[in-house]
Every structure is written in C-alpha cells, then in structure tokens.
Length: 313
Image 1 (cartoon, rainbow, N blue to C red):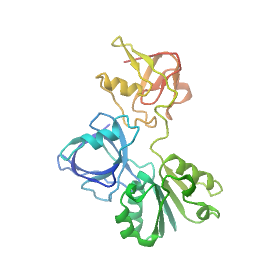
Image 2: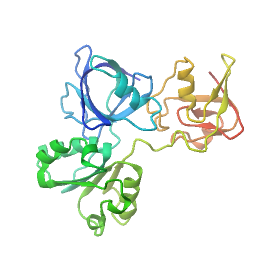
Image 3: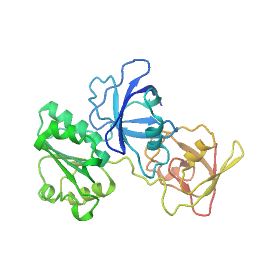
Image 4: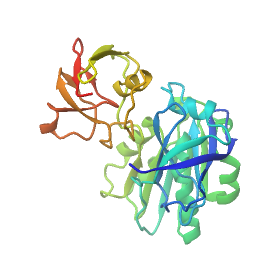
C-alpha cells in the first residue's frame, strides 16, 4: 500500500459539524489524477483509516480537497480529524480510487443527502465543464446543516433543488415523480442509508446500470447487541478483550500493536488475518466461503457470542 505524506494546508467550517480540509503534498510532488466520484483513504491523527470523497477537480490536481462530518457515534476517525487535524498537521493518504464512476449519458440526475454532497459536487462541476444536461436534488435537515449551500445555489441556479425536512419524516422529499417512468438518464445517489434505500426501492423498474449508489458504510462495524469477547494473539501470547463498541483492529491499535488496514469497513481485504481457532462472526464483503474457516477481517468481524478467537498475530 503506497501512502503519500500530505499536510493540512487549510481547513474551513462548512457547517457546525462539517469541515473542509485542503491537503497538499509535503514534498511538493505531483499528485495522482482522479475522476469525479473518487475518494482517498486518509490515516487520521488517531490512526484510524477513513475514506473521504474528493470535492475538487481531478484532472491535474495540486491539492486534494475533502469534507469530513463529525459523526455522533465516531469511533475515532471523524472526531480525530476535527479535533487534531489542524493546519500544518501531516497525514498519510492513499492514492485516489473510484468505486462510484460516472458513465456517459444524455442526461443526469444527481441526488445527495447530507455529507453525500461531496462526490455529487465534484460530479456536477465536471458535468457543467462538459456542457452536459443535469439536475441536482440535495436533501438536508436544515439550511444551517447544508454544506456548500451558497456555493451550489450560486453556481447551479435552477438546476439544483435544495430540500430541508427539519428532521420530520412527514416532510421528506418525494422522489416518485422523478422515477415513475424510466428515463434515458443516469442517476447518481450518495447519502444516508434511508435515502439510498428509498431511491433503490422506487427505481427497481429502471434498466440495470441507470441508477448508481455510493455508500461508504456497507457494514455495521459495531451493532447494538454486540458483546465483548477475547482475542488470543498466538505469536505474542497476549490476550486482549475486545469491548462491545470496538473492533478487533481498533482494540489492537489501542493496545499499541501496529496494524495494517485501509477501508476499515470490510470491503478491501487489507487487514485479512489468519484464524487459528474460535468461531468468528464474519461481517466482511471480501472473504470467499472456502476462506472463512482460516481467515478473518479484523476491521469488522467479531467472535460469535460466548466465544473467543485465536489469531496468528
């Protein structure tokens, strides 16, 4: 895994809970280009690896611009960025990847909810640059919590619809008119789980590939009914207790053990670890069925209730 050393060149508050970070290379070297919808994985000051969408133009970037929401249930990533990634702070950053690429289409509908505006903003800028036909629907709780509100409104005018629901389920935006009849356009949607599920449900009759989603949280790393369990590290002979609200990987990091990880959401395979004993609760999206007796993804998976795991560490 190649990491670039980057410095927080600037930061600005977009809302009370969302901060934009401009990252510049420490050595002044050229940065890898990227396409709209791309993200970078950042090693936050706490050591947690987190994925953030890139907001700026990626053709020949001299900086990477990301926006981070302070999550109420943060396990160290977003809180660490907000509290400790001050101007001048150096961070390790992986090269951009794009799991949410745009395809060529005659027309586009971009849908964002909350912090999901970050890849959508980049897409809108690219489509405008290309002279494409597009519209944006941006749903948030209130104007105060709407990142880039003034910039988006000024730049895209009547091509953007901004909807505030005040947190009232009765006031959520009604998307049905946009999806009742399949259209010759591509839809790109990024936002919280309820928004994604709604769009997925009402677009089931559309041709495959027309409606696309970006979701950085495909796995619930910690669940409400999780229990603490023990992990034996065979090589060191140490036994650690994994709390009910922490992952194996986070517990190892908290105990001072060097860890190798990237997505920390069960999707990349970087933290794949040999399993020597125990009954795991596999929660990743990587392991093949024939691997599950011998390996575990320590960023998301746990032990079955009442069990312990033995790892080749």
